[in-house]
Image (cartoon, rainbow, N blue to C red; front, side, top):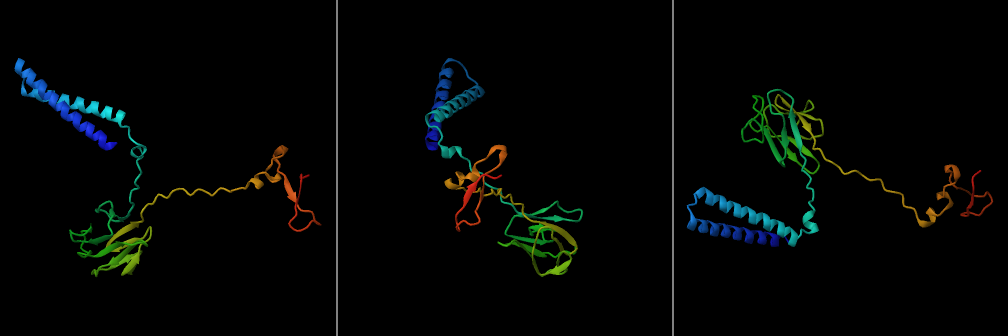
Length: 223
């Protein structure tokens, strides 16, 4: 259907332009038509033909249900590094599988500080989470005040590259609400006396007789 509508639009636009040129040639035989007026005539003919073909295309070739459904594409969430000091950027998104932190301008997260090495550390995105790793820096890498070589980051961790501290924020994932599984009752359960309400909102109860055989129940109205 989409292809048919586009073909109709293309044919109509070409026809509209041709009609506009014919109209200009006819007017030139009768009078002097300025170039601007000729251009406006072609644009008007083009627009009218496109609008008419678009409306006819929707009428003759209506869109199918598949065309009307627009699936929602969830945004890919990622983690952030938020600087704790002043004079730095508001945040660094970890939107790559491998992010290098350092003083070099070619680093993904550039931190211009004398205590930071040119290629100080890296953050690697794994299936388990985000791995913070030292790249042989001079002043080392720290997580929550402890020097580390490798560390799997968690929400709220404070990492330090040299003297610069950054807060790690885990990716925000919007989880679909979990629906509680409804209790499935059989027809015999629905028709049982327990499911039948009595006057005053009471329900029928069951009580097994003391001398009854095992597995045998006697239904009676509660007192």
